[in-house]
Every structure is written in structure tokens, then in C-alpha cells.
Length: 346
Ligand SMILES: [Zn+2]
Ligand SMILES: [Zn+2]
Image 1 (tube, helix red, strand yellow):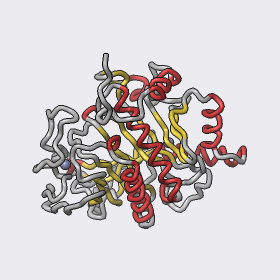
Image 2 (spheres, protein in one colour):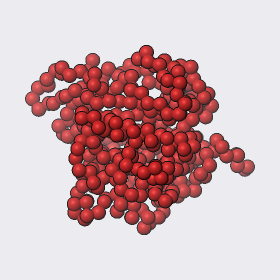
Image 3 (cartoon, protein in one colour):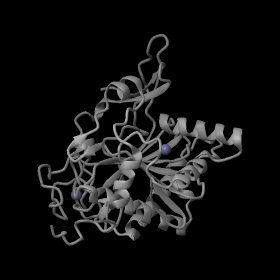
Image 4 (cartoon, protein in one colour):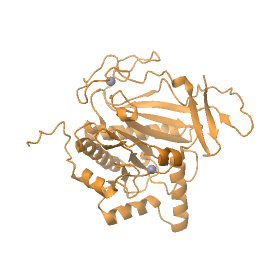
């Protein structure tokens, strides 16, 4: 069983080798159940209230959100410390940190798109608390909060939840964004993300939704057909810095985006949704602007965007769609979730 971090000297990044997780029972009992027909409670779901998990721990009888340490963590204080020393140029080190799971709701059948704005706001408050708590641990250099949603991204349990990886390194994308933001601030005196927001507003075609303090847009440079960013208008380095009114506005924008996603094809819309937040390694991240990114893998219903030669082989994306057209589809999608809307007459 290998559980450690290995340095990739060519990409200059850490790879987490967590071979102890290969048998993880990371699925619920509802595979094959048609979408939208899951019950509110599933007796053998490891995320439902009161149920037993693989570790032997029992979930609390929670009524809103619920946070627990991942039973099969990729990073943990218990990760092996006595590692086999690799030869030559190779480096390894313990996979220190923490991995957690956040349930959005006790209701097994709901998705983020079906929560009320107040419930999304509660979830944001949990993300704030987790960022503060985990980010203050000395071994934690970055807090990656993300939701994988749908079988298209490997999640068979529909119980609404996200994960948090609090790691002893900064994930590569965040490192790249932080470096670009720092350089832009130094060279121009401006926040890079504010310049992006200005450019999006100047064009306007890709802005999906806007309220007093938050904005959602499909960026000019989108790599996925329906890639959407949600951001506060003021620059904050992480979710914990949002004020209460800003958090509420952010929850409103986030909810509207996921409702529009579901309404596009009247189906639960799969995505990977990371929070991009400043590292917690003590560096200066003045120019880092917190945002949420949606990376939906579908181009059309049942048509996956495969990552292949250019993306996996070369590291750059080849996009088969025009961001302006996809943004127009999202702008036109209704704001009332289809499950709550009367069926249109044809
Ligand atoms: Zn469940
Ligand atoms: Zn980002």
C-alpha cells in the first residue's frame, strides 16, 4: 500500500499517490435509479442522517449541513511518515493534511440547484468556517473545496455533498492563478480579475447574471462549452472574507447558475465545481480574487467533451463551441427549476 506525495520533476507539481483508497466504497445504493426519482432517505447511503459509514462511524441525525472527516482520505495526519527514500532526482513526502466531506442537506434527493437561497447561504457559511479552520493549521498550505456532480464525473451517489482537500501544497491551477494575479498587480497596479470583470461587462454577451455584489459569466477564454465563473464584485482572497450581504448575493448568483444548468436540457447537469481561493501558506495574495468555477463535461445531452490529445497530451484545451453562443443559451434558460415549473404545452 503506497500513500505518499511524489514530485513530478517535469511538471513541477506534486502527485498524491493514495493507493489505499482503491477499494473505497464511494457509491450509494441508488445507482440505476432514474434521475429525479431518488427518495429523500436511502438506508444504505453513507451520507444520509443516522447511517453507518465504512469506518464504523455513524452520521449524526443532522437537519441542515453536515461535515465529517473523509473515511478514505487522500491527505491525513495519519498518512505514513516513514517513507521509502526514492533514488536520485526523485522526491517524496508524507501526504499530510485533512480531507473532509460536507453534506448540503439531509435530503438525499436534492441537488444544489434545488436548495433555497438561504440553504445555499448556510452552505457558504460552512465553507467560510472550514477555510478559516483548516487554513489556520500549520501543515495546511491550501484549502481546495470542490463538488463533483453526476455520473459523468464519476459520482454515483446523488446525495448532495462536496469535498474539502486541505493539503500541504498549493494545487497547480491555484498556483498559476496566484502568480498571474501577483504579476498583473505589480505591473499595472490593478487586480487581474477586476480587469476580467471589466472586459466581460464591456462586452456583456457572456454575463449570465448579476446582482448588487456578485456576478456570473461564461468567460471569453472558456475551455469547456458551459464553463461558468461566479465571483463577488469586490476583490476578496477567499470565501471567508465575504460579508453577510455579499454571501447572500453570492448564494443567489450560484443558485441561479445551477438552476439554469439543470433547465438547459431538463436534467440534473453534471459538473466539477471548485472554489478558487488564495493559498494559506502565509504568502502575499493581495491581488487574488476568490471565485467559483464550473467545469461541466457535457457539450450536449449525453455528449461528453473528452479530454484527449490536446488537453491530456499537450495541456491546452481545444474548444468546439463559441462561448458567446453557449452564454446566450444559459441566459435564455428559465430561472425557475423545471421540477418546480409546470410543463410547457407544446
Ligand atoms: Zn443519502
Ligand atoms: Zn480560477
